[in-house]
Amino acid sequence: MFTTEEAIAFLMAEKVISRQSDGDTYHLYCSGMDKIRAVLRTAEKNILEDFDEYIHISDTDMQPQAQPSNILQPLLNCIMDKRQAHIEYFANYNREITHRNIEPLGLYCMLNNWYVLAWCSLRMDYRTFNLSLIQTITPSDKKFAKEHADLKTILESSYESNKQYFVKIKVEKSALRTMGRTKYAFGLYNEEEGEEGSVIQHYMTYSMDSLARWYMSFADKATILEPTEFKDIVINIVNNIRIL
Image (tube, rainbow, N blue to C red):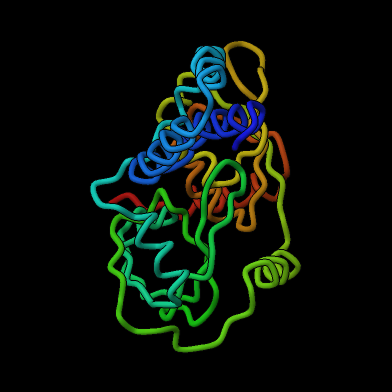
């Protein structure tokens, strides 16, 4: 039997999953929660129902990522069965759909986003893909073509070989709505109130060039605070713009 404390912990997790998962996975979790409620004693069921009204997530920017087709469950099946998959992926850096054959190794959450780490046959290297940017997934009958280390080992090796850059910008609040959740995909890890209707955003990125090209989409409503290197990259992009 579950204790009341354990049941409440599951209830709190349900609230988070409702915002941080795709629609299909959330419905599966709700089905599991119904089974948990079914085995609780009457008194504990009442406590759980009463406690539900005291838990609420008000961040309107965090919504269930229900997609036209199921992404997460087929992806998890490929990971467990060690099967390849074909994905259509929206690449933020050039705003285009790319086609990749991958060997998905595991999922991880970083900076409020879920990613799949996979071996990419196109790049012949390990790559991370933001789940919210995967448009479709088609599981293959083919097993992995190569042996892989475990997820933790590959991630640690990747982080050791990549330099992290920290960027701070000031953004007008009017630009926040158009940024949506994409700001997290580009490494936003802290946001604080600024002066005169602005917010100060802090980014951690492995590619200042990619961040700079996305920054250009709202640059008229933002100011780069630091570092100077990031300013130089943006200026170089502007200077290379060709208008016929």
